[in-house]
Length: 185
Image (cartoon, one colour):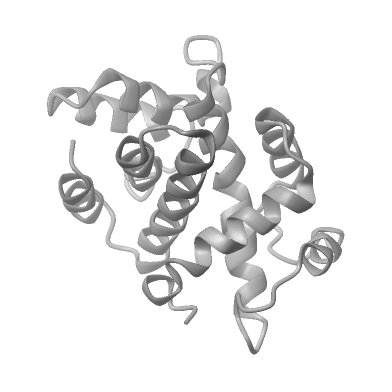
């Protein structure tokens, strides 16, 4: 599946602008990490774009990810992409564990990119100059971006084997590359 095909599929199933921007943010982080780990940037970017494409229609587990997987398979999408999408849901871990770099990284960037966007939206300079120290401080405030699982951020960081500060820096850098599309320029 090409990036353009993935974008069209995302737009077909996701009308909400915030969800589309979330997909773009995760795509940017996945592309960053594909380069970082010497992996296929196009494949990883497509996974980032598609990871939540079914969420607007099926937000509840286990339908979220599983309904999307059916759609992807019906369209002949590579099983590696389908399995990666499935792996980011805790409810699919028995069959699709986070046991390879693509799956680990998707989990690692999903919650963190959402949290970083929330941080950027309350800063006058948005992503510019955002430091890990200030992000970690915000993480200690349970009411800030309360829907974001801090536990998932920490677990994801451990999965990819980086210190939290480095993971935050990497994701901020990745999001800066997509700042215009994210409305954070």
